[in-house]
Length: 329
Ligand code: FUB
Image (cartoon, rainbow, N blue to C red; front, side):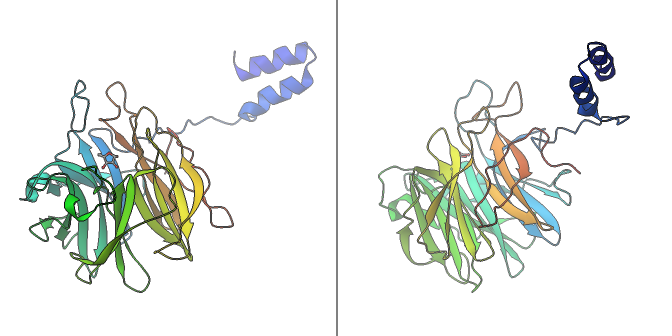
């Protein structure tokens, strides 16, 4: 029933209050303009494990590429992708900037990765399966432009499974996130089950000192992401499995970290939940993936989505509301 007919029916029945709410549900004379469904943001390819940077007023979105067919129930990921935008809604895809095959010492699995800019160069820390040292490993590629072409910066892995002993699993050296502190010191965080961190040397391609374990992250699964706002450091991460996203805060990049709770609930139709947090033109954004493209989407055919992130006055983050509408122009 149309809103105005409902209004007249309610008037006839003497239900004046109902009549007014029926009318004001729309607003007198107001044309309804449905919002566009902008999530997922990329729909022609399955994209996962987002990371993003802002450079020269443009957002660069880096993702993994889920290539698994519908009857294949694990990750098939051979390359990473890059997209750019100046409004968070329209995304331009650039040529494939980096593949597992660009690392001669790696054999498969273009898993989660993150790019950072330092002095005009772009360093891309990636997860791959090592060809000769059993287990996952972290490599680093470098480019002079945010869209590449990227080249292996080292010719070997930066982190291999035999360098970390806090757990026996072969996939604890995944999901690198990189952060440069205000004093110029760069840090690499990564992990699965255990969250590791280490300093990076000035050259960004060597670890500087010991690999340490981050304490105080309950149910840490993977996908750490470090960001800073004001004088607070935030370490968000995938929590439990299937994954929610939780976070901790600290006044120092080296901790101690104080657990602050759940940031994002289970991602629709997908057992992983991998976030990136950026601020663009003064607005905080939360970038994540779901299995939201139907009928093909799911845990191994994921899609990147973007929603707004809001902070409380005390610096804690409000829980994310995942929406189909996403960001509007
Ligand atoms: O995409 C493969 C793996 O799934 C990533 O490395 C994890 O963060 C999870 O999203």
